Length: 98
Image 1 (cartoon, one colour):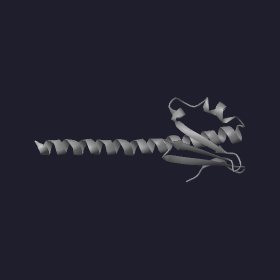
Image 2 (image 1 turned 90 degrees about the vertical axis):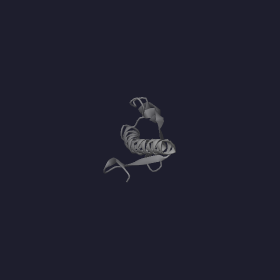
Image 3 (image 1 turned 60 degrees about the horizontal axis):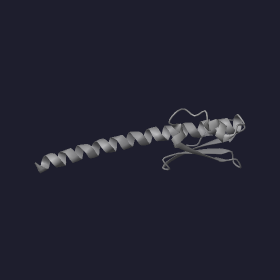
Image 4 (image 1 turned 120 degrees about the horizontal axis):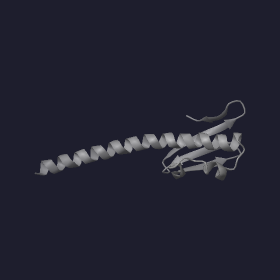
């Protein structure tokens, strides 16, 4: 009987790990998308960040975005753990940093 309980716990742990791994990948894509969109909207479109965020698709309001106007960057963070940054330059516009 104990072996069945341990097997069940192992399967549950494996499923939770797989879910967390997939969620982290999706959160990274969402953070990258918001950094790029916010950078383009603010530094190329010359709009206010609040006006840009009003155009976000559903679900993206959970991604936090911070601007640094002195170096023209937009940094987006998913769950406070996964962060992506986009930087504006005259020659290339807004590009994601690796």
